[in-house]
Image (tube, rainbow, N blue to C red):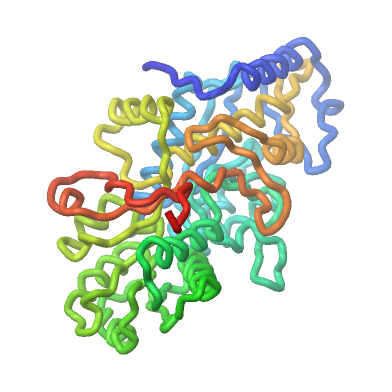
Length: 426
């Protein structure tokens, strides 16, 4: 397998110096652990264990498959080793719910050799996992959480951020604001309806889009919700039709988004309404499962480019065949490298050959990440609310338009209609 080098020489040199320090300055395990959260001790012949809390079952398994591929490729690109030890990956199903995230986090944190975890996929699962991971002194780096609440420390305003939580996916504040700007500045819309399903991700995005749309002079004519598992959308669509909005902002997951789009075309008063979806519907299954009703739908999602990413896609084809099923595989790749780089930077070798890895030291090393050349762009982790733990550049996003090629010809991803780096007034 051809190894992808996504690290600049300065970063590689820093990690090499860290490794030399580990090899030349042995100390006892007791003396080495000066960490206020405690240490993970990895015996001489034992692997370095990292976890992943991903969706492995249910309607949005594609998110987990997408991220797991990114995690595995990041490990493969290190030949499966770190500091001369095998990297062992433990994967738990976090579903797409708070209960699933909680259960996955409990299982991982119960392992005294666990260094940290990649995940979760869904923001709701992160809400369940974060308190457990934080209390255990571990870290989690999420590849596809976007709910603004997860990096907001202000509980009074709905924030839930806790120490140890980071993400390489974008913040929904950025996506929501730019979606509203797109609706008004690019599409020339004046009336907006929003629909969520009560999930922290969908509700958070709908709120930001509505607020920004109103601030820009648009009229928010309807704000409503469906339930997860709903299949009959006639009632809410009929309510929305009364207001004849230009835009229906619908950041729902499959299959609810499929039913919404398919049934909307049969509702009088919504013939000219355009659907804008969020990252949850930036998946090959959306046009395939929705059919012709998906044509003309706009979906915001990650925009990753560059030579290193093209090489990554070649590797994906070699290992898994086909294209990644969703848009956050590169974010998972970057998240895995941030975690493994932190381990390299802080591990200390004791005189018995074991590695001593401080838990707070890992958090500090990730938080100190600055201008890391990831597949998704230059990553710098922030510490201040409402972006505490955000490491993504925030501009690697675009609006894509679903065409006949995605519905009938298995094309994916759809063509870029508008990049978030553009001005909406252009």
